[in-house]
Length: 308
Image (cartoon, rainbow, N blue to C red):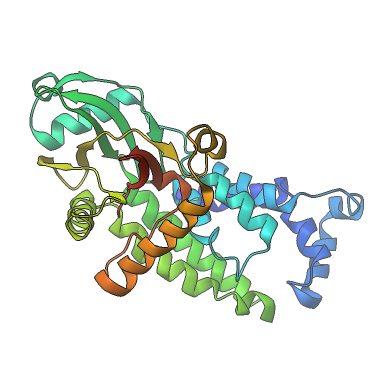
């Protein structure tokens, strides 16, 4: 029944956002596109203006966290997507409806085995950020440190299993429609995504990654990785040092701080090459929501978060 309801919703959104009309006008379906003319309303709305890039983003948002995360991932694949679709999908970053803060409190207490008031001097039930797999709450430890508390969404694993299964069916169907879809390697994309998203459910793995990258750049003045409080760490809850900085895509704030875009570009390329070619260990989710710029020693440094 759950699969039926989910398929029904996907089908509804397919027509709501005019994907059928877009396929009629494109060459993606070859001769099979004329099947859409059997749908009565397509006979009268063929000239309707369609913003396909925005509509694809809206579909991802309506379908929830798992599809949002997929949209985030493929937004970087400009070898597969047009510029306008890639740009629109990039807007999906950290734009997911949060779950109830009281549920988050209960999850934290269950995972850590302590009352939340025994851990924190203060804890804000309103999340400061909400992403596909987890959301983040600001807090202060009893020892005085400002921290963020990352909490994995409840029941997210069962939703992932359901949606991945449907994605595979959709990808297989589309690849059988035309050679153009086949060249996109949609099945391979979903398979890769499946491996990535299951890894992100384990915050212990993220903490280990953060610790390793922090160790690799321990003597660097150009990059900083926030401290993870390993005494408060489980698969579903992670407490990390709270950092303050400017999102790397906030051009106005960077200009106000007189931070050179040229220096940012030069240092970012250098640091990425160091991670890849010297350390053989790198941050693989470097979208703007995960990279901050922080003033440091008369210059600036990069602060990286979300090291799944």
